[in-house]
Length: 188
Image (cartoon, one colour):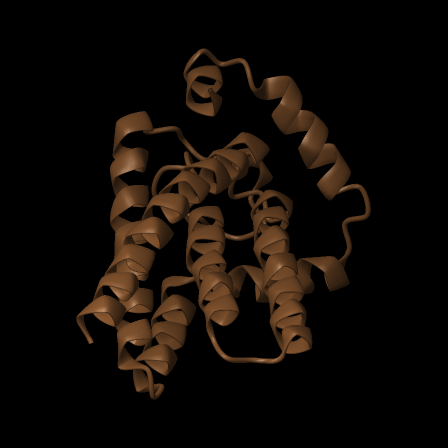
């Protein structure tokens, strides 16, 4: 649906409305804050977090995290090449490259950190820790999307589409991972 609306050029009102809300109180502090937040969905940060998971005791989880990151990247590149929407160059606070739709940072945020939330809930941790980590990562996912709009490198519809595409992908990926883990448990 989001893709159809973008292709038909019917997202301008939505994009402008959300941009106005997100940038209502623009300031040097918020600009610095959002530049910092957006970094958490950069390729460098995703690679570092993936490496961290590869070093954990449960190597299998690390491989799932790494494969997830690769899948999200490939999916995002494919979608950008299909839609080829230009970035909002007149709004940019930072420089963005490549196509705008869907937002790669939004896709990485939900797909990558959403999968980590799933892993947290499958680990043997106290419920308070699971809830705490989930809330923090959920806020990070949301703030990364907001940062892309605030920094002017994406339209709100790009971010929404990134979340929707990544959410659909994540459901499929988690289903696959559950089946693999269940099969390994049954084979043991």
